[in-house]
Length: 435
Figure 1 (tube, rainbow, N blue to C red):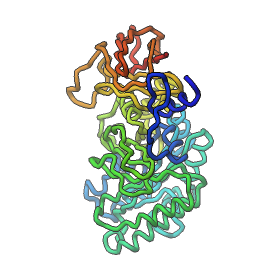
Figure 2 (cartoon, rainbow, N blue to C red):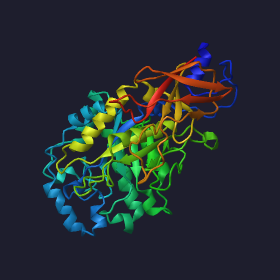
Figure 3 (cartoon, rainbow, N blue to C red):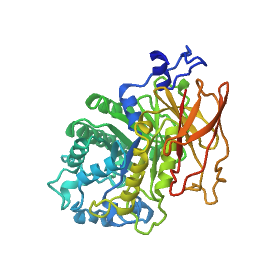
Figure 4 (cartoon, rainbow, N blue to C red):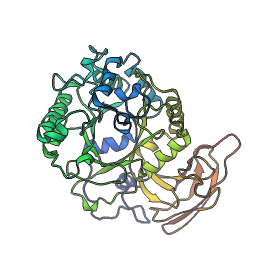
């Protein structure tokens, strides 16, 4: 394939049967920060705050109706003695995660950083005073080559101004974000969450996003639209739409003025913070399936864990993430740099990398269906793909190198998968096609 055509294929651009780029309007191109973000592919979400001490989930204050004064007594026992940013960075690297997003401030209004007098609800008024946890976090991640990002709530359960004087509250919120923007070096992105609490309010988003653009021009701007509002774009400055616990679909970018990407955020159980009596955890296989479902749509996966009371990483989630990292290492750059564009049935899909096509085959065996009684496992049934660019002559499993039967007629392609050999189950199995 000629150089220009190879570049087009790698970028997911359509080609004709002779591997020549088809001239057509491709729409807006991604800003460099967005292109970099898409190649990060897999990130770690970290929910940790006062609520972690109660081990009943991050919404415990409101869900259990705990009075404000009683709840805020948790500040007196917030020691952060087990918070080790280097362990976070090492786990992310082990798991194949390229970025982390930490809750600098969650809905309870408590900040893991020194607000410099903007609020009393911050780390300086806890036994952990004297430590700058966000500085520790950002430094440790950069040392391991992991991109640091920060979650920052936009709503606040414990600031009376949120209900009584919203303009004054927004001044406080924006000053807080500006402080964070100026205090910790280059941040890969800001993940806002909470505008859904006042859907009709004027959140003065031009000002908020303007602060980020002024001080962190290369940072991604993300604002979570919440469960059910999947892929909704609410402001032109947004760089990535969100899919909270909802699998993304390939995006139609023709209606946007700029290139927008997507990110699914998901959690290992049914809470985002520590929850000792929630035993309904996802398996590593399930996480692999969610990662593949996200990449099928060209989106990232941000996978959450909730550290323990004083910040120690939880054992089950840590071990599961590490196992997912083992799977990722079998596939090299493909997971990060492969470009989507070929879709099959029931979750099957293809990624282009350089001049090769890789088909991701799902449901060869039962793994971790999202549904209680799940869709029927397809096993070794033939897999059909349409609108496949170019002509392909051979196919092999990446994990074993076994040759597979391949049929192609025009832009329609059929792959005949085989079952796993004894002792092997890749969850989602990848076949490499060559011309």
